[in-house]
Image 1 (tube, rainbow, N blue to C red):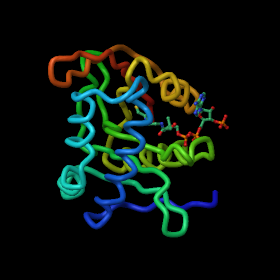
Image 2 (cartoon, rainbow, N blue to C red):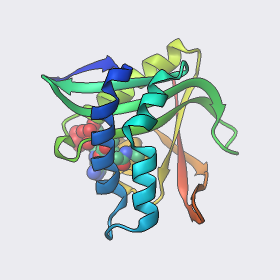
Image 3 (tube, rainbow, N blue to C red):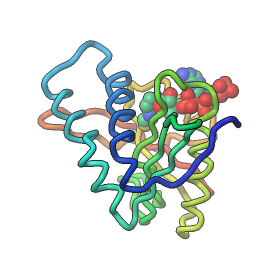
Image 4 (cartoon, rainbow, N blue to C red):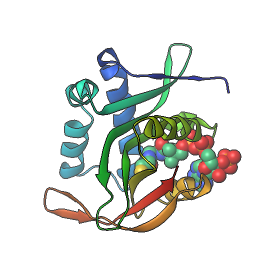
Length: 171
Ligand SMILES: CC(C)(COP(=O)(O)OP(=O)(O)OC[C@H]1O[C@@H](n2cnc3c(N)ncnc32)[C@H](O)[C@@H]1OP(=O)(O)O)[C@@H](O)C(=O)NCCC(=O)NCCS
């Protein structure tokens, strides 16, 4: 592994925001940009939004870096929460973004391994997450690293409802 993983601090908000913006648009703006998507990315992926998350006591950011470059990050909630109506609960992996240029070199897998360790330390026996049903790349990735699709949990942004799948892994 030629990159390292460390915990994020509020000083990392700017680079996390830039990487998240690029990766979000690469993943979700597959047919071009719409106003609702533009509002979503500038709202959820702004530096101020991430600075606020980086201050939350029950949120952990894991950053994969090589030299001075951020390659990807994971955002984990260490609070135990319910995975929708699936009957599962545990720590939620809120975001996992690997920069498009850095895909398929093991960054996502390594971030998920550390996220699982942090979840165990937090007392969880499960990690859960949601993935957009049309995000076939992410679904293949989660299946490849041992996650199971256990149901759906719709995601609502403005007046649109998106089908999200729920994935879980026992620790
Ligand atoms: C999904 C994502 C996190 C995967 O990260 P990654 O660093 O590229 O994945 P890894 O290199 O660790 O891959 C581990 C294994 O997952 C599987 N995998 C990863 N990407 C895959 C793809 N596009 N298609 C099929 N299998 C894939 C493979 O089995 C891979 O092992 P291999 O490369 O030895 O064959 C990354 O593509 C990403 O950030 N995508 C955009 C944002 C996103 O969709 N995040 C998840 C939202 S729920």
